[in-house]
Image (cartoon, rainbow, N blue to C red; front, top):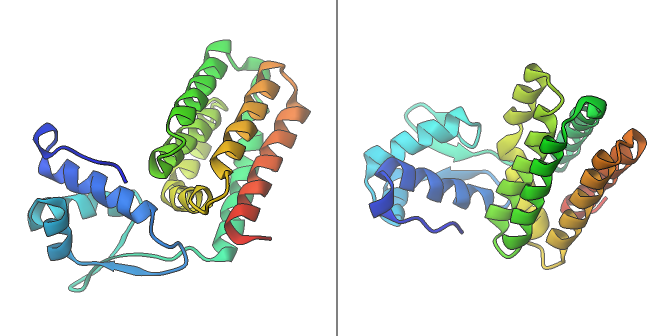
Length: 213
């Protein structure tokens, strides 16, 4: 879990970062209610910063709020996982279809994220944050801001799915690094077929790691 130093950040930011890391590690199949008093004590803040953090997390899709009851983290079912990965396949393969106009500098940026992921291999939450950054950069390179915004709306579910995948005792993190490298190698060689195949293989292995079929 990400460790934060209260002295270096505002209390709402401390609460936000702690809760985002906590939510990412929750079982995806279960609905989890969040108690403001417990969160304030755990994060070393108070209810006001916690509420500010919850509003921010709600805006980003990490939590939902029920008037007069509080906030909760919604579950992600197996059909949700399949639907999200199918949507990702469509968007990501469309994005790399623009690889003829993709700059070497953009591909270099993808490689730098892989290198950062390699250093974060033993920190599932940080590793998956970088995983999301890798795929988001790739989608933005496609040049369609509407699709990029849609892709960003999947962020919290992708984060929880990814943490689940790399926290199961297998070397899923190592597999992800190899799969990402294949995507970048295909982009650098300007092979659209290879890029599409690498994306499909990556998302298929993610599905198998998370739901087993």
